[in-house]
Length: 360
Figure 1 (cartoon, rainbow, N blue to C red):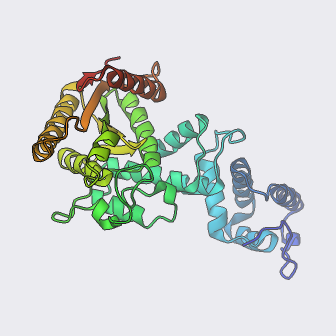
Figure 2 (cartoon, rainbow, N blue to C red; figure 1 turned 180 degrees about the horizontal axis):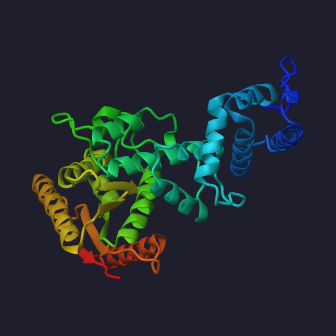
């Protein structure tokens, strides 16, 4: 529907039925709303407030007729704007990159206040809050509070039309998974148990990590990260061309999928051979145990490959850095990741193969 700010002349609102005082008030609000008709998030809030004021003055029956004749708006359209005004009445959206569609979604009565607060924190940090991100914030909250099962969570996301925010429903551009040979169902579900694997795309991981960082900081609980890389991957694949990058990646993916048991534990691949694990509510000892398990399983499989190909001197090795902390305002997640990245580079330069612990 296109809103051009013009009255619907075929059915003119009867202002004569109102008192002079109310008629003047409603006509002023009508003009003000039409001036705001190009809706930004702040305009939505302003329009919603004026709609609430008019509704209070003229009553429900007159209000519906006025909406139709002056703006050709449905009740649901007006309700969305009024809800947005009520839920975000103390927020100034002038300098926030917040789409109206996201505002409507987050203002719904079924959405928890905590989700709205997190969306505002993201917006204040410079993140664009569009409909897809708002929808995912809501899904994340339901998922992590156990009001949405893991399977339903992923199946719901698979229906999304926004490729940047699909989770576990497609392979990554920079992962080891061969998108041509692995279907969405094979990537997301175990063929035997129909259990969803914890691999997510990089954009989703960033949003999820930021949300978990805020939650852990607020609740004063541990959050752990494991950064890893497959060293000598290119050399390894060049020496054994029939052991493709796809197969090498699938080896690690298989181990990670079997090791990570909790629905809130996720990982992502980036820069081809690097990966990052997020372990919510996990102290150092728990994260270290997971790192040791992954490395042990990987080395066992690599040992089997080496024994089958004795001419191979250097094999693909796995380096891991484990970090566990209670997030605080004194440390940003971006700074933490940059420190871990540098630590990983140092390990590669030294030619070590290890599990390192980074403490803050």
